[in-house]
Image (tube, rainbow, N blue to C red; front, side, top):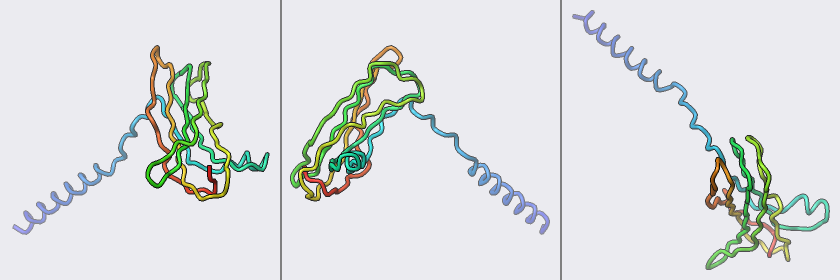
Length: 155
């Protein structure tokens, strides 16, 4: 009888260990989408400040595809937080009419607005794009910055 109980406990123990070991197997990675649009966090442009001693709020965005894309358009908007509602500060669109090959990216690194004063203001970026991919137009919906950052840059 004791041997029967010990054998039953051993079976239960092995089943529990086998099921937990199976649960610890690494899961398969989800495939990346063929194209993605990324927008950066609003910041003071170091390039403009270092080269020209000019303070400006800037937002960068880029489109990266694992397949060829042509006629890429990326629009970046800079928004500032308001008391009652947020305000659009600037919109800038870039066009890349050639073909961008897999793994390459198209950048919009030229969206900035000069600071008029040093008033502390919170900014964020919004980006959207379109590209001709696999014989048809594809649109990336509005993507927002991950954070809203207060900067000493009044516009």
